[in-house]
Image 1 (cartoon, one colour):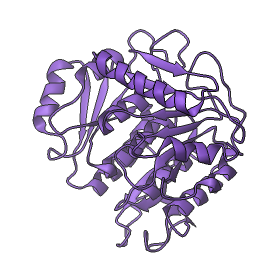
Image 2: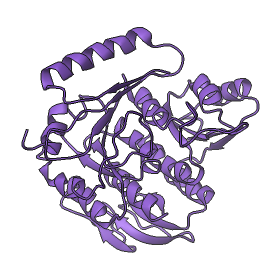
Image 3: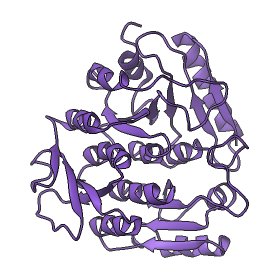
Image 4: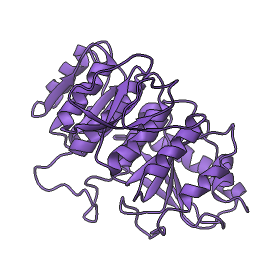
Length: 351
């Protein structure tokens, strides 16, 4: 696997040229497991930490890049270095099912697993078998979301792996199944009809060791033996009260209210608040990077995020990149999701 680490105070014009050049190199060199483009830009004043963007040519590759960046066994300095016989569990989710992608948080939290987005009829066997050495593969979806033929394919080429399908007929039942499997009994409730509130909740869930429960917010729900600690979203999102309600005027304000409740985060994952395909991959970074998740957009003034950037610890920048770094702004998604201009304006208003 190849990694590109771009450092220094690079002017904007040169940066764009270099980014395009490296993107071309990645296209030419794409063999084996996915190649990760890891960007680290120098500071320009305002925000003192570095920022990094994770993106691929599509949502599937973006998920792989966020997962692969955690470097589970690449070298001896890795925090997640695998000992002989160890492996990293993987959670496979249909690329079009944002609800299952959100539910994957519960498994990633409980089992230090990686979320991978896939097509119904295809899974990256080489990545799971040879890179993660997965001993357990979770299929989060019914046979409509992940075909039986895909399950058989995995079992054929990973015969020693334990393949577990969480195949309940609807996404809410699958979500409950992930909570039960995780062993988490205290939860945050969020509307499963839209993704931003639940994704924002994932960072708080991690920091307070809570499960993420999705409900159809327009309908009453039963506790099913769970304790609701927070409800994320207004009554238009989740009508039923439960625990402390965190909400704002819109998804961005709600994200900020969740972030204000969160204590002890070391990094911030910024995602496109308008579209889920790339954004849901931020789930991979929540636990390993001790991060909160905040939605932003090219369509709004994101200067209100400075409150949370200011609360980050001092950035740990070094020649090596690893998941112990803190004080970083991590952007998930390509330039069509959140542009460089938007990120630069948010982080470095004086530039």
